[in-house]
Length: 339
Ligand code: SF4
Image (cartoon, rainbow, N blue to C red; front, side, top):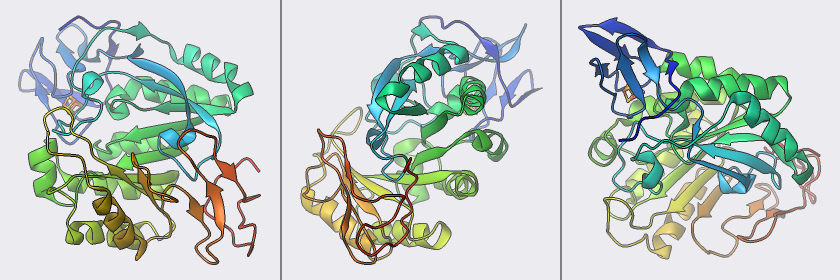
């Protein structure tokens, strides 16, 4: 594995049993000298303690539509400077970004100041801030936190696209600096998380609820045939979202395609439609992603069913709401917009 530089002393660890005990995520790795934790980016160096080897190490930088995160109710029609690093603390067999999540490489080194400067530079194309995405941002913790502090001071937004697998204390430290999150709920059982992701479901659900206290939350559920697409799981998930977060929480069902270590065929379109139908019994804003189904990415007023935001894959969304209100019946919609 190529060496990553620079290193930065990590947050959330203590020395114990001849190693460093990382407290950043529920894995709570005990890392011996010269070794790395399960995420591959936090290493114990006896002269420094636990270090983050990925501080400022950016695998990808792009200006993306906000809709691509996906965030549909957060500044629709804007763009966001999107950054990723390397590594992940889960091992999802179906990972859609495994080239950067499961392989650690040296790459462009950025500073938090440079990220803010870049985001500012793109304001003329409606860039509202920075999204930490592509790989798992919570294991990029120190860089994300440092950058988010500067973004907040510069009146720019910070977005996380995350698996939500982080310990409660660092999560509560980070969230006041975050404006919006899209959190993956990857399945609806501990068995699913254990067998397919190498993690557990409950910490993710706890963190989803905590995030709701601080910022805008949308959820993504990748629908995988035979693993999490049964009616009981889909309904259980949708009911939980309604009961714990509210019916107005946007939920994105994303279509699985074979990737990394899972090679079963892509999710049938009929299954995607079924997921939407089941969840729509409980939730007001259910979207389908990675799939062409007419109207499945549009936002409709939950009261009068008027089309409020029209989305297509290749064009900017058409927004008919103004000041977050339905253009027909005037209902206030859960949209964070510029106007
Ligand atoms: S962040 Fe990495 S090193 Fe720390 S507990 Fe999680 S997997 Fe282990």
